[in-house]
Image (cartoon, rainbow, N blue to C red):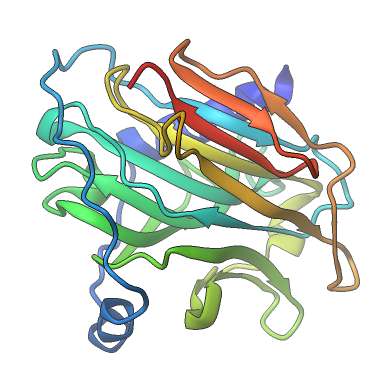
Length: 268
């Protein structure tokens, strides 16, 4: 239960407040524009009452453990039906740590894709309507700056999203498939976080009427779900488990080769 509470705390604080860095990198945007064939058009945004704003999740995580140094998975690209122009729907892997400098404060690094309504007032993504890659990291939320970067409106069809510990920079690198490294933390988690870290893989929304990626007939698949170990190798996370979705319409199931899994919204 403690791990679940930290998962919720980390994302709700990240999305509701904090300083933000929004950057459009022209060379990377060009690469993203040609990264994949066009995606199918998502269902039209649904109308809804903008109430009950908070993060809602569908996915799984590990326990906090000294085994986790990084996370990765392929995530199939699925635009989602949104709660009007204010909606959002995300998918990502993440590494979470507890700050050693600021006890009681968590930090994280994550990379993924997001489908955002054109009128979202969510601070890190205000003014960006569409479907794009993004990443976010913070050393200790509430004590250090929250960094969020948006990269463009083209998302690869089934990319490998990776949060990778690197001894070359003493940092966590945020990577996406053939595009490689998009960003990296400016701090050393090895010295700024306690030794036990957590791996997370989730779909996320902000309103009950937002859909997580995927439908019953075409779910969003998280495959190649792995953790990075101390020597830089990748392995299946032994402590991984699916957590109960936060909303009844959010569904999940393990695939034939656990811990790979799928998520979807039903009824849509």
